[in-house]
Image 1 (cartoon, each protein chain N blue to C red):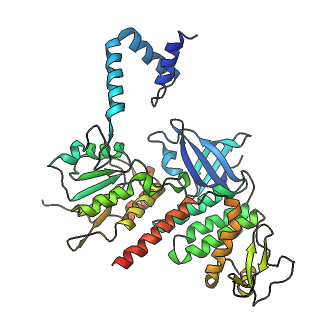
Image 2 (cartoon, chains in turn yellow, brown; image 1 turned 90 degrees about the vertical axis):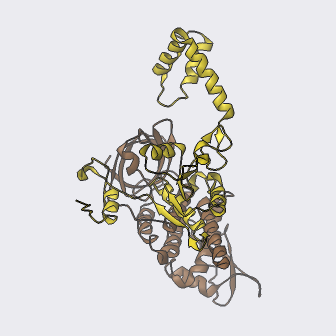
Image 3 (tube, each protein chain N blue to C red; image 1 turned 60 degrees about the horizontal axis):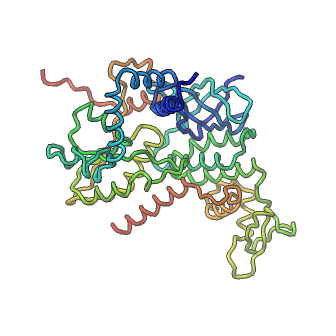
Length: 208
Length: 238
């Protein structure tokens, strides 16, 4: 049984959200209409404004309503290190992990020839301009460790291999492969384990 | 069904947590299937279901689109990196574009598996890809016949052009471009990956594959060419 065409439309519209099936959509719709009309009003307002104003940062291509995002403007970030990620979610993950103080460049995807996604679709020309025109010393290629992510990292590395700032070739690095913290070797997949093994580090006894 | 050896050719997110995949399988050729739940965060299959990794799979369903049941890795992945990866993409794009669904191609499967090992090594890339292309043409019954349009033997000193529609060769007038009958005869008897015949082999493979690919260019080949062009530029600049 449906309530009315408009309520049905609302249920249908809510299902665009990830993880929302028919039951959840129903709960959400009833909550908004029955219990929290003010909240619903705020949601409509913010969603509309965000859709209208949020675009990509002109410098790093992350999501922002400004011309240049906060992180790019922040004087406290290290100008010399640039980290290339596939998505804003990856950027948030690295920020959340802490420890990185450089800047970012967001591709919004990866090279995928079978889907027809080429270098121009993920802003690699913009990345090249950015790197060549600035004083970046290290480029961290933090694309995903999937075949497409690897191919993307390779393409960027080839594209920028001759970049030379003040007699110094651009240093390009890739995130290390490792066993997860608190994990057990027995359950780590073979590929990760073999790469973690070949990338093992000297044991550090530290200063005692 | 008993688990089938397979390789993932392509994968694309489907709905929220599933993926639409294309596989090359030992006994059933190219198979399209839905892999449920593999896009879910933390899904173990998410990282296992990668191209260039030997898999064992079972599926169910009678239509062209199957549902993947079981998937296990069947050995270690070929260690492709850099340009090797692009060659791998090329092989996958070629197969997804030309192989009909569920046409058994056991020999091509075996050769694909071998190709993945070989394209990891720069010197073996071109010959390995040529062999795969010719094996594909053979499976599709599109292999060139090394005879003239009049169904005669090729003469060693005459230059020939390939007539795709007839799968035969046309003698070229003197001075016109073409490939010598001598080289073609070698191609006919030798291994397609013959190093000394790389240029002729590439030319013939392109010509023979063209009608199967239609008007849409192969994106992975474009990508490789872009990269090669860039490298040449940067070398000249240096």
